[in-house]
Amino acid sequence: MDVTQTSPNNIDQIRHLIFGEQIQDYDRRFQELLKKIDQLHQALQEFREETEQKLKESEHRFDKRLSDLQKTLQKEMDAQVKTIREEFDRRPFGTD
Image (cartoon, rainbow, N blue to C red; front, side):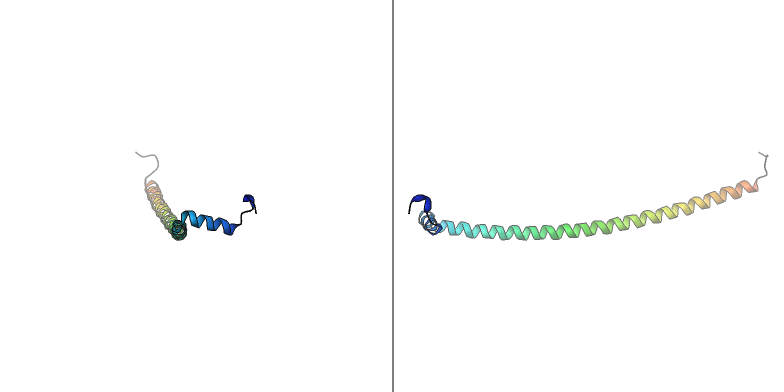
């Protein structure tokens, strides 16, 4: 077997001879980091969904309050127009 045909098993043996337990420690730490990244990704996804839901609820409350304010303003304007018309109708035309 020449150098270009080294089997994966031989490469693992060479790596183990050169680096020993360091590789196992690095692999373990790498797996822990991957697990933490997955947990953070899941937490971020949950936070995003929760934030989107809260935003939708806030938008709904805002739209309702805006609608209520518009109705109140319209009622007040209608009442003022009615008062002005009544006042105008009570005044005799052409007198100051």
